[in-house]
Length: 405
Ligand code: C6P
Image 1: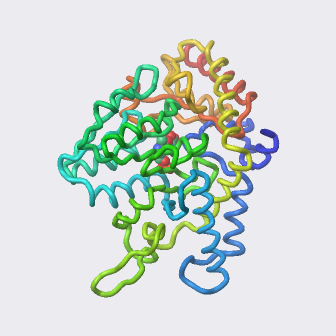
Image 2: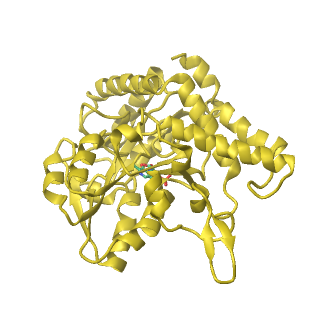
Image 3: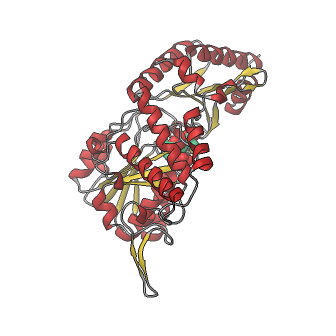
């Protein structure tokens, strides 16, 4: 990887914050965008802006082709069988809600069970809690080991013939753990359950092959993989999407409408009601191009090197506790320094131009399981450097001095 070349693609990395060149370690929340993505969005509005699927004029035709092309790029990126299996949503959260509303409401009944894990982001818990309230289903949670891995044997115990859906985060936004989703799918399938994989943190960092994983649903957010905000996607097997009722109702998702009723458009438009985020979709396609031009394996390798370097450097910070496993993980480090509040640490880091997230990371059940309310989280991406980690560790040591004097 040509790190200097990559960094030059990200204009925001030149920002000066509190007198320092910014160090952006909040990539699990959202990544930065390369010039190519920013240009693609700008270019859409400057040269091609029109509504899609609605007119015969040239601009509308070009916008339609570019938007459909973006679906094809995403399909290829995660190795879906067809681009018609890719539904663009606002984000991963909306994609999970799409499944809860359009599939869950129609297919679940009292007594059915959904199995998720204690490692989930709220987006893969709260929609199922909502279904529990309306459909009388049971929601079960798989626990983690003390070192931050899922307890795989619990899937064997908790998934039964009553289980209709297993929802698993592919990679944890707090612990960094990369879960063995292929094995989990096998267990779920042996009991006849569907499986939803939350790929919000995995798609930006590791090779995704939905056919190899064998899942029924896979969700992700564009803004965590160099794309614009307001665009994400749901992958679902074509047979399931064909059987499912729509999610939202109105323009573009229909084929015919009479005063008696309506029939539905072909996939994926059946699930993309109203004027979509055309510019965002096109931007996401360019983000995927960008990641593929680097090579997703190289992205992951780089992060692994940064992670190992950071672990080494952080080891001599007094009273530090780092959460999550040592192996099989992303470049995400959640930690606490005993006696200092995470927001205080994040505040000192900000004084040094370093952006990290502090708080509960939208994973309150997981943090309760870890026995903490908040953590500091540093998360790396393709443009981060070893020198940045040195500066980060220096600033952490200063925080310790300030608060532990
Ligand atoms: N996690 C974080 O700082 P949205 O907000 O819909 O784009 O992504 C939701 C989501 C779903 N699953 C996982 C594993 C996630 O990490 C996230 C988003 C961000 O960790 C914002 S809370």
